[in-house]
Image 1: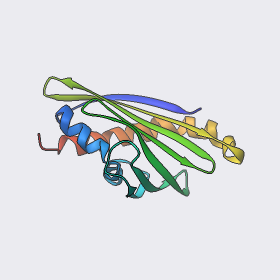
Image 2 (image 1 turned 135 degrees about the horizontal axis):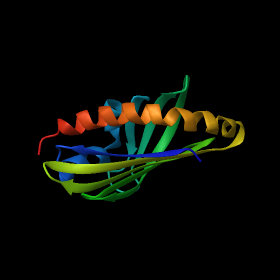
Image 3 (image 1 turned 180 degrees about the vertical axis):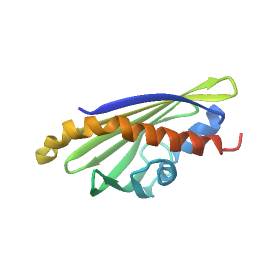
Image 4 (image 1 turned 90 degrees about the vertical axis):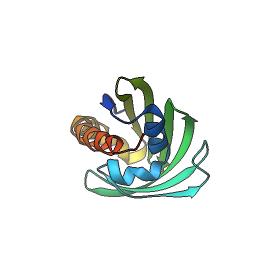
Length: 145
């Protein structure tokens, strides 16, 4: 199962970081692969669903994300699924001097023919994670509070 974790500091407060990350529509700003992300049900809490269209390794894919955990101001866990993919985006937020520290874990599993892509995805993840963290940090640093 391909996975990666990155931890970084931001000037955003834990509360501001959590609010930003709990609204997964913001993935359009910080996730390099996301083309569109719209809320399809819910109020942002547990059970809220999002329709995410992403480009990944040259393919356009649609994934339904569901907020599995939303614990202010410390944790956001989104579970994404489609017919051949299950992913978990987990954000753990802790107070830090001058803002917050964010630990971001992305875990993915594939089924069917897509399973064959797992080694390629694992090899690509470090480069994608660096780009994602750079964009995410910049977005969080712009948050008020």
